[in-house]
Length: 205
Image (cartoon, rainbow, N blue to C red; front, top):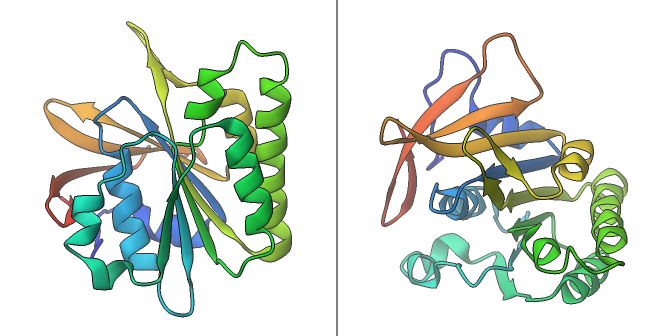
């Protein structure tokens, strides 16, 4: 696999494989999209077609274009409203995708959080995805935007994300190094892996 990890505690890749729903959240530029693209490259094969949904206009098509064969079984699409994302997810329930990737899952909710119906729509979205994961075996991989404070970093709609996702990772910077830290489920010793990004994707340290 192109995403090998050397960790004495837990292997992020193994956790992703075992978990029906995985979320990566962190500050802008931390590497969330690159992690999702690398996972997509490695997981999506002929017997496991994937749908990759971008909501941020940040999808690195040039990186995908350089590795076309690696993404041969992934359909890429973009949506720019919460209603369109709901519609797409609903139609996905009739399709044969084995993995759904959403980058990022809360950005469209953040854009309309002031609207009265936005929370209900976002809650329905999360519940519907969870239902497809449990009933159809659809694996869900997603990233989430965050609001950064002086002392904390928290994803918008985090209470819902924490409720519906089985496995959650924080992505960030530590002493000029990129890291992925397991947040859920919690262990006595929190597993942390460091990584770099090159033209082909994520390289684990």
